Image (cartoon, rainbow, N blue to C red; front, side, top):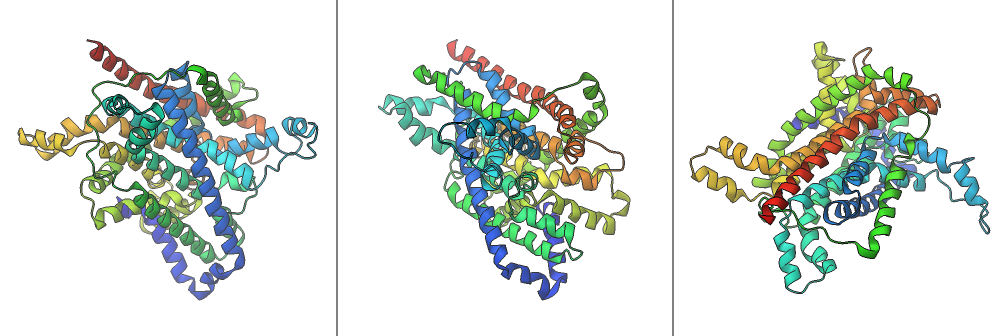
Length: 508
């Protein structure tokens, strides 16, 4: 699986290797160093903000008496399905040049000019709103799995709630926080739509310009390899930051859910935080919606759901063996396989698509421009999201449970299916949800690899926004939310049902 996921990397190596010394001269250009610095700064800022928002919202929704928790649990995850370029367009329409909100800010006393949106600030805002759900979903799933007895023991020994969170809860959440932060970083490194609309020159935008404007694509391949190197550095840093969190067996399945912590006087600020983040994240859905326009989207909507569901299932199946190998058998080989699996997620979608066009047209002609190649591209593109969910779930399962089942006569596959699989199901479901939502809005891969006549909601949104017909883009963007909401809601509902059963058993 890691080898298949590294096909885009092989494409870049072939392109860069055949380009000669002239192709590698692009690295020595002063502008390249500036672009790399902008890329790293953007990734760092988005990762920090998205992680802080995701952890805070997950804690409020799962562990406190926040009013309408189930509503906020669903609403906070929905920005994940809004294409990042649509979020950027919404920000431009709201606070860009000539926007009413910008005029209101500039009309305030002492304000001569509102802060500039284009460039770094707008890119950070749009990408933070697009990536914090990665952290929110994974950390929320981890919080629901934690055994509250550990935190209660710390409280009984005199720790304050803040001290318990810092010294007990946060270390236990480290694998999930790290996985969510890693996905946010990789998404930022690979994003093209936001930085293009915000006119911020980072590696993805420069690579796309090289592919689009120059006949010679070899320098673009070299820049793509630079992006791969940055991804490798991020993975190395994440592995070191992970520390010894993988070595412990974690907790077993939590026997009961934790009690809700009262917010008290912080209830209103907490509601304000949830409402502000969700409103900003879903701002792109404003505008008129016409029933006739939505009805015309039935075929693209069906196509989107079908390929997204298939991609989610295939990605989870592919991620489980990679995650199991890296958690249970941490060797140089397994770590290398895991890191290779993350490689394609940091590449622009256009590079992944062009790589598969290259290989499928040359070596798999009958499969070229078929649904099979499109699904394979989705799995390659979003395998890290399924792997993050699988890995964080497997870390929290004590392997002694599976060993006990084997001691009672179960074979290895039977013990895994009967004991481990039910315990890691919430993490696998969270990873599958991430893949499903990301596939719904994927654009470059779909545009380049879809069969002739195959349309999705993402391509409908892009067709409208590419000609600045923003009102025409509203119905397909709204349809994305209509499709995503029941899935996210059901995920939260099943978790709450399990928590309710646990509370009933605890009371009994």
